[in-house]
Length: 221
Image (cartoon, rainbow, N blue to C red):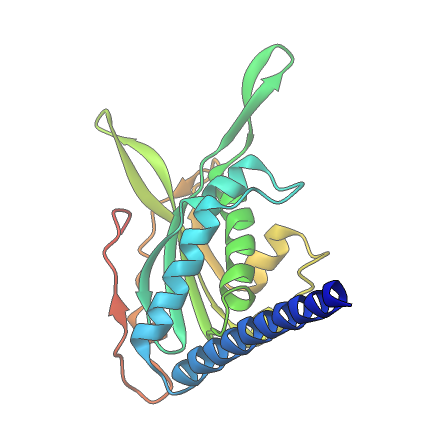
């Protein structure tokens, strides 16, 4: 009987511990959500940066191309507002062995569209407590400038949640998603991407006409 009593006490203590953990977790989540709903920019910035840092350390999802995963892990947050997130990343052309020769099988714009589609989905839906109304993603690629490697923006996408809600993220091709989100880029007569200016100040003005976002330094900007 003594052993049974001790067992019951231990089980009760375990359930009590689990209950405390669940309560504290729920309280913490409610606290974060309330601060976000109140427009606490420091809390919003922290939540976005923590999630982006997690992307850099997590294992790549099954079936995701290495080049796309690299673009996700290279993402840098440039600016955060109460309803707006702007980020930049890289997209490089891909080469493979074809007929015994190394050939380009995907250009930088193709890769930028794939990276943009995956990043947009994550920024719109995967950050706990954060539901931005607008997301801007600037994609850069490496070019040779006088024999020196440099990064230039080749595509920028200023997406809004209304357009994102119309997308079937599980089945729509990445290039279709990027186009529907408003991808902007330029290519020359040979199909080579040309540098563009990604800045669009009017897009970063919040609905109340003000702009109080946090600007975050990025090496790619």
